[in-house]
Amino acid sequence: MKKEIFQAPTGAKSEATAKPKYDKIEEKLLNKLLRLPVLSPPLGNYLPINKSGKTYFLSGQLPLKDGSLGSFKGRLGKEISIENGRAAALQCTLNALAYLKQDLGSLEKVKRVVKLTGFVSGMPGFSQQPEVINGASDLLVDLYGENGKHARTAVGVTDLPFGACVEIEYIFEVK
Image (tube, rainbow, N blue to C red; front, side):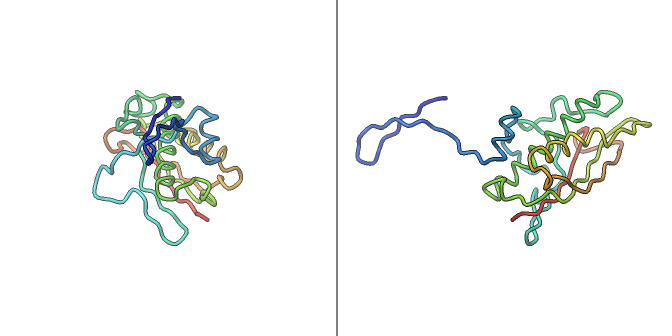
């Protein structure tokens, strides 16, 4: 970890270790060798997160990582394997959690995961959408336990924005 030297207001030099503050949910992510990403700006004229009372609605999340789809561009059953599709669904979920963290300040304020709607771009005849979206569902249950279990829809589509293989929208209830 990098040490930072800063100038104290009195003019005396002090040395401090810059240590990010993580909540319990983020610690669970780190234990899985996962991190919340830096958020990408919305790719259109919409709100990435909208709230009504204690319910948070997150717009469809693409599996963007560092502003790029990278290996998550293509269709299941052609360019994308089920394993890579699951990884894309997990990345969508990390992006959603990053928006929640930005708005709530802590992921511990999530009371429960209400619903996911997952869209999987696949070739004709591809029918394993539920297995792909399990990449998102499994992570949420791992992080929130019983409160991570949710209603879910997993559907197949021919095309998604920018050629993404997966897009997921989320509904969360907060404390």
